Structure formats: C-alpha cells, structure tokens
Length: 304
Image (cartoon, rainbow, N blue to C red):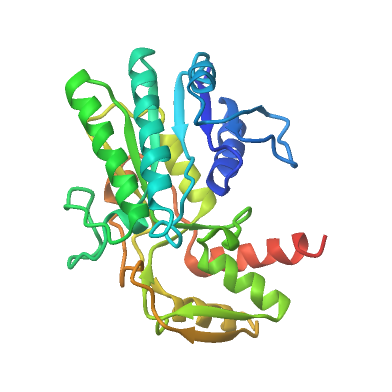
C-alpha cells in the first residue's frame, strides 16, 4: 500500500494539483489548509485548521508518513513589505514542524522557490550546488528554511528533502496572488485587458507545466539517495516577450503596458534539471504545448 501523504497548504495552486496527482497514483492523501476548498476531490481527505496553531500542527502530523510543506503567507511581490510576517510566522512555524517531523520519524518534502532562492547567477542553467543569493525576502525566507532543514539532516541524520520549483503554470493558478505571468497573460488576453510588464519584457524564467512539476515531486517521495535538493524545472529559459510571441502565434490578440522594473525580480533564472531527471524519466510538456493546453482549459472554465 502506498504511503499516507499530508499536504500542508493543500488548497493552493501547487497543493491542489499535487493532491490530485498523488491521489490518482494511489496514495492516501490528506489536504490541510485554513478552510476546506469549494471544489473537492473525492479521492482526497480534507482537514481545515490553522497551521500556526501548535496543537493543530501536532495533531495533523500524527497520522502521516510523508509531509509535503506547500504553505506560504508571503509572495515575491509583497515580501519586501510583509517580510516580518514571513520570518516571524512562516520560518518559525516551519522550524517547529521540522522538530515534529524529526521526533515522529516522518519524511518531509519542502517546496522551496527555484525562481527566487538563487538570485542573480552568472552561470545558467543553475545547478543545485551553487551558493544561493536571494534578492528579495521571499527567497531569503525560503533559504532560511532550507538551511534549517540541512541542519536537522546533518545533526539528527534525518532525510528531509527540498524541491526548488522554477515557475509552474497551468490549471488552478491565480496571478492575483502575486505570481503567474503565463496565467495573467492568457486570462487578460481572453478578457481583452492589457497586461502589465515590469521592465522591458526580457527577464527570463524557467516555466514548467504544473502536472510535470507534481510528477517530479511524486518521485521524491520514495527517494532514498544522498541528495537533499532538487531543481524541479524544464531547464529552458523564456522571456516574457517570448511568451507573448507564442500567444500571438496562436492567433490571440494581447495588449501590453511596459512599466518600470522592480528590484525584487532577477534578470534570468533557468534551473539545471539533470538531478531530478535522474529519477523522473518522462518527457516534459514543451512551453508551446503547455500554453496552448492551458489556453484551451481556460476558454472552457472561464466561460462557466
């Protein structure tokens, strides 16, 4: 029988898709978040509660074998304003979670941010072993948690893993929460609205279709090797302008406003995925295929 999985932050974009993927693969999946979702998956169990309540956290981890930590109260865009929330709540509570995971001899996979942890790097694609240099507090909070995990692993011989996810996109994403350029571009094109780009549109990111990201994370559940960190990515960079060109080649009209660039955005983040491809061998969805696939999904679901 496959393992009991607890996804903390199960209502989020990644959490929802990951719950679905793991349940379809036969795992016993429990999704935990502040409230139960409006749209439920019959194969997933749902628990609502406050992650920042110690008693609740203690209770929900009692019946799990693997914890997937997918919760965050800040995002790259607002973390330079709300940074104390990230350090005082997300970081501190995750340290407590690490302690519980260690005491109960559970496995944990922490969903970090490959798009912000590395910062500006000269050599691309970026390997997991380079020194991270985050340029915003969101990335730094993730890195603080990563370093705490490494310390637990080293001192107590635990095996908590870190998934540095690049830039996922696809069904369930909501750009209004602070991330999701492809999501914003497609939805605004469908609505006939202008999309706003900070800078000249030449910033490059490594966009991965959400189903591929979830399948890669699934392979980490039974991983028993020596590596702690995995880039979850496609290893292909694409600028915002390239994304717009792909959309226009699909025959979709899109209007753009270019505004002043933000200091929180790195110029180029492309992650080397050699390590994760060592355990996940399947062909990845191409950027062109993924954008078209997501567009077809949105045309149906936004009309409902």
